[in-house]
Image (cartoon, rainbow, N blue to C red; front, top):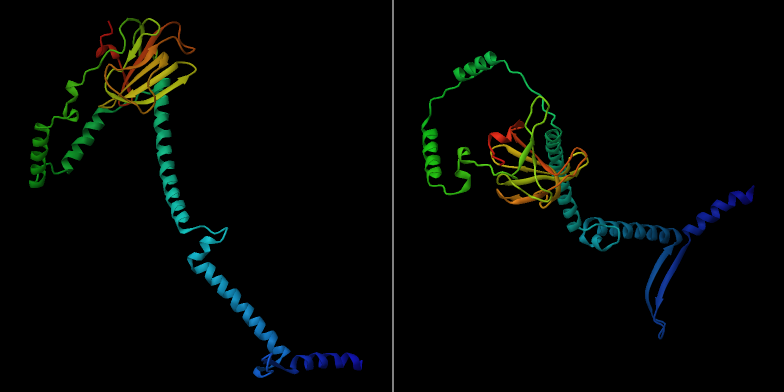
Length: 289
């Protein structure tokens, strides 16, 4: 029991025993420096030194550009690029969503999924009268000046965008005999023109290719978007010479005639015209002979 009581006292005495650290000149044995120390002081000083060293290292890494040179830490330029890519990704996701909606509408055009909408003529007229009655239609000074400015610009505008829809002419994509006419009751929103295999298929007007792919039922299909909400569709082609996103001119070759697709029974062109989402009869505007 007495030995156990003496052990804490021995430990305490060892910690508090004073020692002297002397620095001597080896040649002359002259005392240069001396320190009075205890084991407890050495332990405390060592602990404080280690804590300060760790804190300084952490601050150096966390709050200075030196951390960029340590493996595992990203640089400022890399973070900036990652943020820019994140913004671009969000923008691309929005564009993809818009394109998916657009392609869904094009798919309806390809499948002929068009539903007629009934309008109540009297209610529409009454609604228009109410809206007109609530709006002040008298032109103000700013509106008159803007109209004069626009009229002057259009008067001397030599660009293609200044042309009116009345001058918009459609070019026949092929010349041949019509084997099946446009028929709304049968949901045949096109004309089928019999042509020789590999005959050139031409764009009916200036526009941009919005679809150029293979489909099992209608073979090689190309769709062109034109001005004034007009879309032309060319199906059962043998091969396509244009890709999605290409700009085409009226009369430019976009495909070769063929017999592709499960619904085709011979070399011909299945040609459709759509205006603002509604089918129109191509023979009202184009002479295929």
